[in-house]
Amino acid sequence: MQVIHSVVELRARLARESNIAFVPTMGNLHAGHVALVEQARQQGTCVVVSIFVNPLQFGPNEDFDKYPRTLEADCAKLLGLADVVFAPAVDEMYPEPQSFYVELPPIASELCGAHRPGHFRGMATVVLKLLNLVQPQVALFGKKDYQQLAIIRQMVMQFNLPVAIVGGETVRAEDGLALSSRNQYLTPAERTEAAQLHLILGKVSESLANGSRDFDVLEKVAEAALAKRGWRVEYVSIRSQHGLGKPQVSERKLVVLAAARLGVTRLIDNLEVCL
Ligand code: PAF
Image (cartoon, rainbow, N blue to C red; front, side):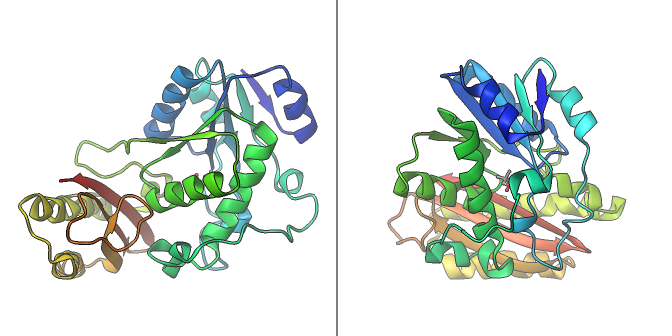
């Protein structure tokens, strides 16, 4: 496994590869990332993982400075799984201030986009740059960041980028909490409570499976259940899987998405519901 920090070296190393599977990450890898990299192994003969905490996708009051940077431990987890780790410094990715950005469709201002202005713009811009640098045949993203995955799929399609986008299933702890690098910000009591997010989404999913179609009521009941337990809820929302628009009652492929804060930690989760 080669760890590469420069764009020039990356391009030289990948020039001879014609079947690259790429997993972009911000590092601090957990079992969810490892599962994606294992999936990538099945998809390409050269597996590239990027590790880059992208300043463009963090708001001024967000956790860019305290986001865990654990390159050595990450590389140890990738040994035997990845062929190349691309870990650029910020000025390698942005040698001059980035002034060109991906302009996003209105769906990127809903759900998480409504609470993290500029986040998806910064995310889509770095993903476009990374795809240009690595030029993979396949790129894999976790379904835990469902809205991110939907935006990337649309961007790749509308810009005719020659890459197949694959979504990896969310990996969960035993109690159902979706694995996330931000889980480590939780206090022990919050960590116990955190499993409720998945449980409450499970109840919404159950109601949908039982025929309930009053989406607004289901969303409000779930939001109230979380709020009563001390969560600061940003949203619980039932959407169409495809495009994430508000669904018709006849829609059969739904996803229930949520974002809420426990103490200082913002957690997101979602459950796909196929009726
Ligand atoms: O999901 C992430 O880790 C990041 O948003 C990504 C896709 C690596 C872009 O910085």
